[in-house]
Image (cartoon, rainbow, N blue to C red; front, side, top):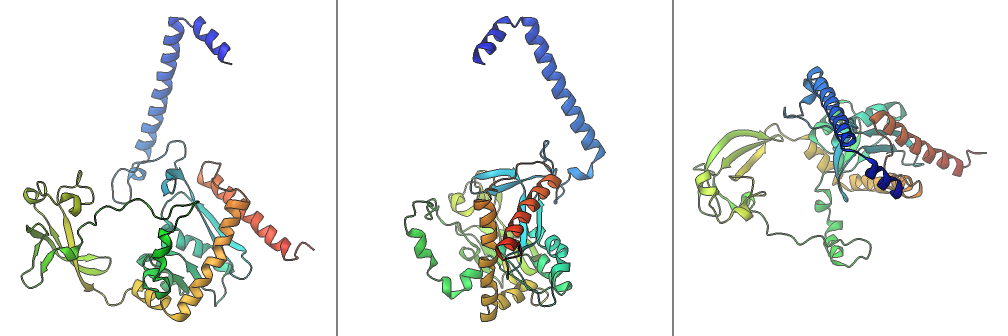
Length: 333
């Protein structure tokens, strides 16, 4: 093959090279024209959730960028709902999004026919949001959805940090060396009576929001002045991205605006002895299913493009899992 390529290169004339270059330019201009035409025909689809221009993947516009242990990849999220008694997958969907919060309600809605009056939905912290909990409550769906700090409140996990220091030949749980902790709101001197705020460097911040609402909580916001923040020697400890962010902003919360939130209700329920016992069964129910699909069935990545095809591939693997479960429990006879 290499010899044939070398011979072809030797036979190529200047005219052939120009023709090849012209063909490449024409192909790129054709692709660009198609993209411009699509953007003109779909002006609203260009906007993201916050109104900014949304980037897309030309070869697979249904997919999404997702942060994984191997870096950021272009792909899909496969989600499945599993029956606790037999580990049968009752609903499976694949979506081009890296946010699991968006997937809870579609999956629960799709599996309504398989739910009984006493069905309890359990899901990990990736599916937790105030919007999702409110939607479940509105449809009278019993659920236990963990929040990100659930284990931090559970005294049974009080000593879990000691295991991170142990050497592990498969996975180093020590992580990368941590940088100096960034200044938190508690490091700022906030005078509630005078309504003033002073940063750790001794500079006065000015208020840029006294009646704000953040995630249902009443808040007061302060912001530093550029003349103080830009030359400040504390930038590395004060700003998350000191090379890009000019000034520091800080917020102080005063409590809930409209009483107890759905998140607070869920925390109280999941922290109860009964809630911990019920939620504790989730890990042994659904995680072995994903382990079977990923390790035993070797589904470590989707091999197709387009949500319709990827969704079919995900459902096919889940179907094989169900068939094996039924066969091993005697249904094959």
